[in-house]
Image 1 (cartoon, rainbow, N blue to C red):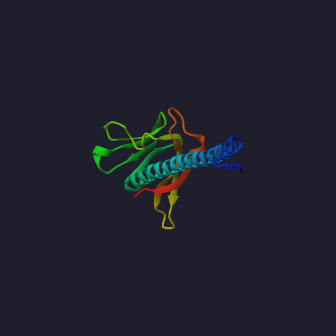
Image 2: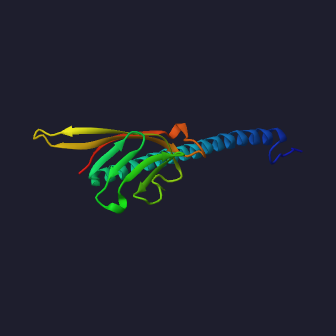
Length: 165
């Protein structure tokens, strides 16, 4: 009589389980890498967006200012609206702060952004007709906030010059 076998032997099952475990481990590793890459990309995007918005807000204020009173580590702008005069931009504990007039200083950057460097340079310009105007060079560096410091992988520096009216 002939013995008919059906099913798998123990050795075959062990081989299939090992192959499945290897494929599952590779799949999980690829999935984990994709998630970490997505997180890093989101942090970079958020850092760039936050720094760009802060720079744009400062440039807008410079444009509406009647004069630039001072520019170094802080920016002091003379405004036509007495309630907003002076408008001062400064750096405090990683946040870009703006104080309008005698009001309370408020953070311009969101809490997810940590500003590591901020500098202003006043530029005096004279036109061909002899009219003097002032502008300011603004340089800001920031990144994703990691508690009390910026994530070094997400640091982003922007620089622009803004002309006051």
